[in-house]
Length: 119
Image: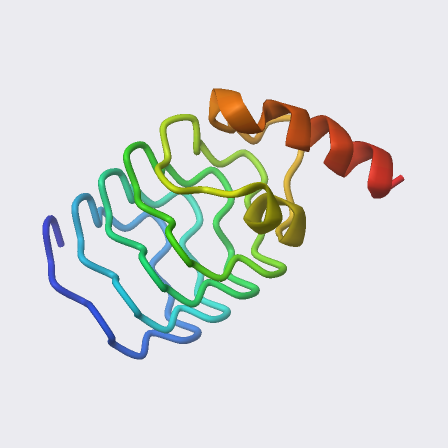
Protein backbone atom coordinates (compact mmCIF):
# COMPACT_ATOMS: atom_id res chain seq x y z
CA UNK A 1 0.00 0.00 0.00
CA UNK A 2 2.62 2.50 -1.02
CA UNK A 3 1.44 6.12 -0.69
CA UNK A 4 -2.05 4.94 0.38
CA UNK A 5 -4.44 7.45 1.95
CA UNK A 6 -5.63 5.85 5.18
CA UNK A 7 -6.14 9.12 7.01
CA UNK A 8 -8.76 9.11 9.77
CA UNK A 9 -9.48 5.38 9.24
CA UNK A 10 -10.24 3.08 12.16
CA UNK A 11 -7.57 0.38 11.99
CA UNK A 12 -7.62 -0.46 15.70
CA UNK A 13 -6.30 -3.96 16.30
CA UNK A 14 -5.46 -4.49 12.62
CA UNK A 15 -2.72 -6.98 11.73
CA UNK A 16 -0.41 -5.10 9.37
CA UNK A 17 2.76 -6.95 10.38
CA UNK A 18 5.45 -6.79 7.69
CA UNK A 19 3.23 -4.43 5.70
CA UNK A 20 4.72 -2.04 3.16
CA UNK A 21 3.08 1.30 3.95
CA UNK A 22 5.84 3.59 2.75
CA UNK A 23 4.58 7.14 2.27
CA UNK A 24 1.07 6.30 3.50
CA UNK A 25 -1.09 9.06 4.92
CA UNK A 26 -2.14 7.83 8.36
CA UNK A 27 -2.97 11.31 9.67
CA UNK A 28 -5.49 10.97 12.49
CA UNK A 29 -5.85 7.21 11.98
CA UNK A 30 -6.79 4.95 14.90
CA UNK A 31 -4.15 2.22 15.15
CA UNK A 32 -4.67 1.45 18.84
CA UNK A 33 -3.40 -2.05 19.53
CA UNK A 34 -2.53 -2.66 15.88
CA UNK A 35 0.29 -5.04 14.95
CA UNK A 36 2.80 -3.30 12.67
CA UNK A 37 5.77 -5.46 13.62
CA UNK A 38 8.55 -5.28 10.99
CA UNK A 39 6.46 -2.98 8.79
CA UNK A 40 7.92 -0.32 6.51
CA UNK A 41 6.46 3.03 7.55
CA UNK A 42 9.21 5.15 6.02
CA UNK A 43 8.02 8.63 4.98
CA UNK A 44 4.54 8.11 6.45
CA UNK A 45 2.35 10.89 7.79
CA UNK A 46 1.52 9.89 11.37
CA UNK A 47 0.35 13.34 12.47
CA UNK A 48 -2.23 12.91 15.23
CA UNK A 49 -2.22 9.13 14.76
CA UNK A 50 -3.38 7.01 17.71
CA UNK A 51 -0.72 4.33 18.22
CA UNK A 52 -1.45 3.47 21.86
CA UNK A 53 -0.40 -0.09 22.71
CA UNK A 54 0.53 -0.76 19.08
CA UNK A 55 3.14 -3.42 18.31
CA UNK A 56 5.83 -1.56 16.37
CA UNK A 57 8.81 -3.81 17.01
CA UNK A 58 11.54 -3.64 14.35
CA UNK A 59 9.44 -1.25 12.26
CA UNK A 60 11.11 1.32 10.00
CA UNK A 61 10.05 4.95 10.45
CA UNK A 62 12.72 6.82 8.47
CA UNK A 63 11.29 10.23 7.54
CA UNK A 64 7.95 9.51 9.26
CA UNK A 65 6.21 12.53 10.83
CA UNK A 66 5.14 11.90 14.45
CA UNK A 67 3.69 15.33 15.26
CA UNK A 68 1.08 14.88 18.00
CA UNK A 69 1.03 11.09 17.56
CA UNK A 70 0.05 9.15 20.70
CA UNK A 71 2.66 6.47 21.44
CA UNK A 72 1.49 5.60 24.96
CA UNK A 73 2.57 2.03 25.74
CA UNK A 74 3.48 1.41 22.08
CA UNK A 75 6.19 -1.24 21.74
CA UNK A 76 9.05 0.35 19.78
CA UNK A 77 11.70 -2.22 20.66
CA UNK A 78 14.13 -2.54 17.76
CA UNK A 79 12.33 0.14 15.72
CA UNK A 80 14.31 2.52 13.49
CA UNK A 81 13.28 6.07 14.34
CA UNK A 82 16.72 7.50 13.55
CA UNK A 83 15.40 10.03 11.02
CA UNK A 84 11.83 10.43 12.27
CA UNK A 85 10.38 13.94 12.25
CA UNK A 86 8.67 15.82 15.09
CA UNK A 87 9.29 13.02 17.60
CA UNK A 88 9.43 14.30 21.18
CA UNK A 89 10.99 13.08 24.39
CA UNK A 90 7.52 12.80 25.96
CA UNK A 91 6.43 10.44 23.20
CA UNK A 92 9.50 8.25 23.69
CA UNK A 93 9.13 8.21 27.48
CA UNK A 94 5.49 7.09 27.15
CA UNK A 95 6.42 4.16 24.86
CA UNK A 96 8.42 0.97 25.35
CA UNK A 97 11.95 1.06 23.93
CA UNK A 98 15.13 -0.95 24.36
CA UNK A 99 18.81 -0.74 23.49
CA UNK A 100 18.09 -1.76 19.89
CA UNK A 101 15.63 1.10 19.30
CA UNK A 102 17.27 3.66 17.01
CA UNK A 103 16.35 7.20 18.01
CA UNK A 104 17.13 10.51 16.32
CA UNK A 105 20.41 12.03 17.49
CA UNK A 106 18.62 14.75 19.52
CA UNK A 107 16.73 12.10 21.56
CA UNK A 108 19.51 9.68 22.42
CA UNK A 109 19.87 11.11 25.94
CA UNK A 110 16.18 10.34 26.44
CA UNK A 111 17.00 6.68 25.88
CA UNK A 112 19.54 6.81 28.72
CA UNK A 113 17.02 8.53 30.99
CA UNK A 114 14.39 5.93 30.05
CA UNK A 115 16.62 3.10 31.27
CA UNK A 116 17.39 4.84 34.56
CA UNK A 117 13.70 5.46 35.33
CA UNK A 118 12.56 1.95 34.33
CA UNK A 119 15.01 -0.10 36.41
